[in-house]
Image (tube, rainbow, N blue to C red; front, side, top):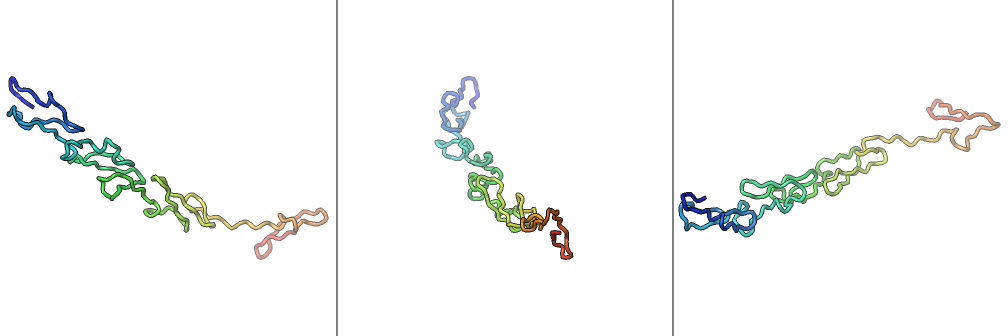
Length: 169
């Protein structure tokens, strides 16, 4: 900024700096000092744009560090491409490798785009994470089978024998 009675701010007259750069008077005391365009996002004034303006992080929130570099905070299920916060969140995390939620031998199936994984259960278990035991298939009661119909219009009754099995009487 210029000061004095007849001084002018040259940046106000010629604010022709590209991108997100700003015009700066290098020496407000010297009217012949050059004007520069100051870029907060690195040294290349001709390419001076905030990378966060272009959806840099893809699957996360973008902010700028003190040097103007993009910093990505990834959404759940996503990670930075090379593991550093200065790269986009384009790595879909395989949740099955990190924390397999499937119990009792269930197979964990990773789903795309940060969705929760799915569990494929063994025949002995069910439920979203294979934690509900499935009992043995009930055997038909003797009175439920057509071969055990009672003769002469009598009624079939299931009775537990000494082995714990049902018999038709």
